Image 1 (spheres, helix red, strand yellow):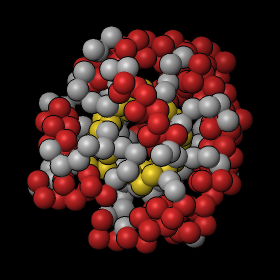
Image 2 (cartoon, helix red, strand yellow; image 1 turned 180 degrees about the vertical axis):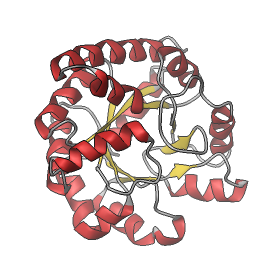
Image 3 (cartoon, helix red, strand yellow; image 1 turned 90 degrees about the vertical axis):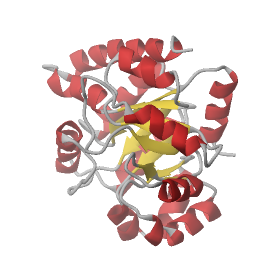
Length: 266
């Protein structure tokens, strides 16, 4: 059982959802992203999702794209992503990498799975990898003993949704809406329905992402999902502050308030 699965099982026994935070590796720099991750963990994040910056993202909204562009301009690549993954797991928190398929293929499928395991990473989220093309990755991730996590969309037909959910280990990433990442004024009503539909097929934990940005929204999602994924709202804090130190202070405030919202949900 991965560190991720252990943590989700522990939180389930405590009757609360996991707080999963997303941050692109190398944003604003490699060392500063480590500092930001430390702030996230110290203020209530249960699981960290590290983004592999990519030049042609299909799922990322403007906030994450801006952060990824900054990371890429700083030269962030696979070695930096793996360095940050190892740093994060050394904080005794489960961590996964979210990456598009191209960087995995460029690095080498088997080699990438082994590198994630070597950094004590729990698994990889692959938002653009279709099930029809996923067998080589599923085979290698299973061999390496890491979780493979796919994204389930609200538009999926029942049979397709069951196939995607059944292929996941660790958790199923439930996209709360169709579209790209970003902060929104409310969480789509389809999210709760999607979680229910997934649970008809599998017992794997279901975590909801896309659009959660406030403690109220986090509390709402935490009332029915196994995990709440927040990314753009956290990144926006760092982007909008006049300097990084102020950004870290505001990041701590937001992280703590989101964690409190999640803990009050049940």
